[in-house]
Image 1 (cartoon, rainbow, N blue to C red):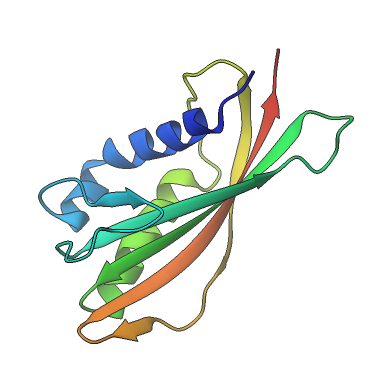
Image 2 (image 1 turned 60 degrees about the vertical axis):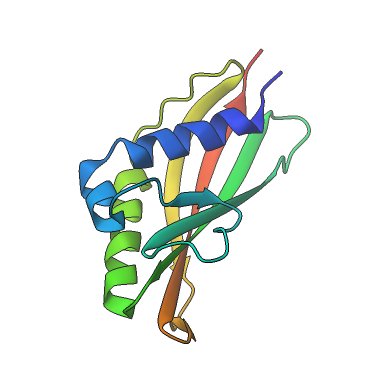
Length: 135
């Protein structure tokens, strides 16, 4: 049986292995699933994912990942998201857990204007992964 946490682990491993992205995020692990801890040092990258299996006859899954970059400027947040898109859009992804065959990843539309909260700005982007569940 395929476990969706294997997909999350694969995405996180790819992001953490990239020295350009980790340099943009600074010292320490600043990539979080669902939400950053209150008072977390900026910059930070937060992701969450949801998934569907649109057709019960075909074991295909769509995993939608929403990434939000938090920084002191919108341009810096955009730079982080640009790197995430570069790493995942139309690139291979190795999923080490059993049960998945990765088919592809596509960047979808960005979320529009940055969201400002005091001295913190966030930008968001969405990517969709297509996977097949294999026995």
